[in-house]
Image (cartoon, rainbow, N blue to C red; front, side, top):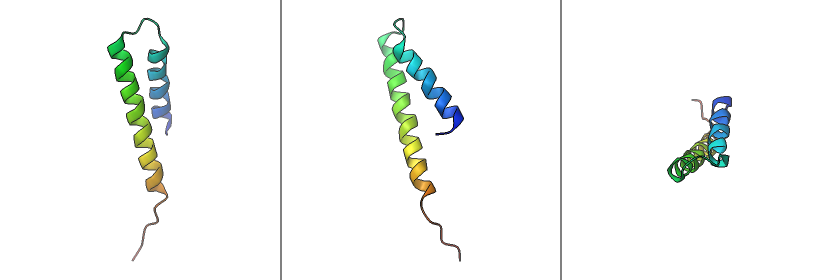
Length: 54
């Protein structure tokens, strides 16, 4: 993950840790953390694919 994604994930984790956050907000934070991590896994896999040059 890049720096922006790390910051975003940390902010979302703070929402999850906060006692004052409502259930909907925590649910959305979990969703976005999973989406960011999934995207990072996809991009990490793409970087390892060799590219043929003609």
